[in-house]
Length: 249
Ligand code: 6PG
Image (cartoon, rainbow, N blue to C red; front, side):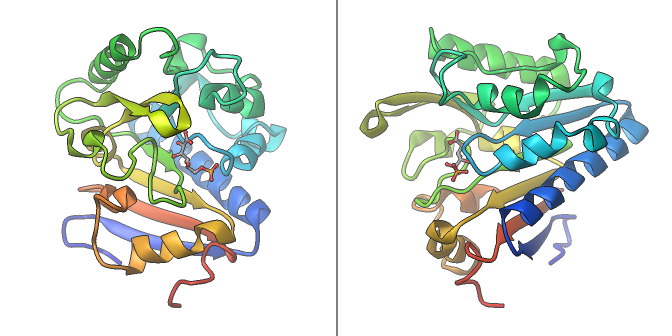
């Protein structure tokens, strides 16, 4: 589907997580090579959770490592849990173990969100980091990976949370008392100017929410992922058969 404002949405369905992850890794490599060829650098915001792990492992395989100019790659995160860096729940830890520790990216170009100590100060720091990296005007990531929670959240934009209404700050603190968790998330102003947003959705547990998000009535407070609509960019949904099982084909 192509909007007249340059926005487009594509849904690709894969037999299983492995084939979905191969496609996601290929999209990463293609986006990196194109961005570096055109602008001399590649900016990507990684998703957390478990679904992208296999994609990241594939990016850490020699075949992909040699296809990306990692010296021109800048890695950010779409959100992070405010836990110690070595905590198994850390999104940065998962990505480092899966591929970043094997990719020759200059350390100054990997930008983890370090919010274990003072979340508010870190949200402000990360906001400033994004502004200085992207310069004046809205931040335009070349690629953003996002996931989908079975409650409709993406990044750490959760239903009915105040973060959904943030239109100035690029990163904010999100407190989730029921999870006993504090997080930092990029906001819509940080995400919706991306050139390409790729959702990775796997498993039957996501099927109902994926159908509601894509084909149900618009209800962004209840289904925050519906707020992700790049103004001038491409949205690509990569889903496995199980997650796509309730979609109208
Ligand atoms: C996080 C993610 C979150 C995730 C979804 C899906 O930090 O948890 O950013 O938005 O993408 O919760 O998670 P799974 O891939 O584990 O299902």
